[in-house]
Length: 171
Ligand code: ZN
Image (cartoon, rainbow, N blue to C red; front, side, top):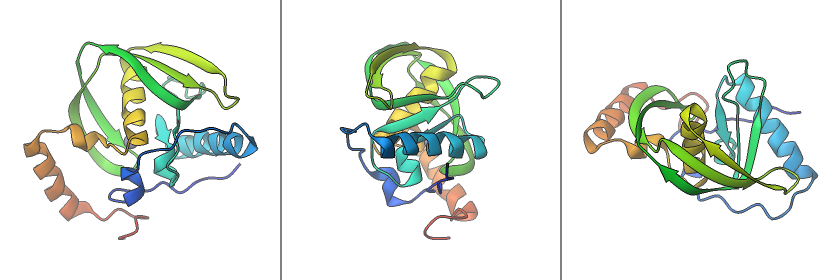
């Protein structure tokens, strides 16, 4: 296992659209394992491949209270959703900034595991929120993009005072 470096806003990789995973090989297995380990060490509940510098459609998460139930989603797709809930979010790529945005309440996600097997997850609560946040990453979207124009201006001012983040290219 190896710890991966978490890319920080405004790294360009965070804006890239992830490529579909077509080969379910040892390298993918290692990437998923390393992403899970990196997520735990960073004390995050989710991590997308863009956040470790790889624009591919791979995400991991663990929303269990004990933090011992990692899940992997390869090539995830939201196939249905409904409802609307406020969600206070943060992001490992934007440390120390939190804001409330609006998310879908429930989602149905189709994905594959590291062996290429298809599965479907019906999610609500924190799993639904986390899936939406991480799937956004795979599309180059950050949670700050969901904020109102006013809050985005506040964020930019906040970032001028607090950025660049340690470990980012501009730091
Ligand atoms: Zn994030």
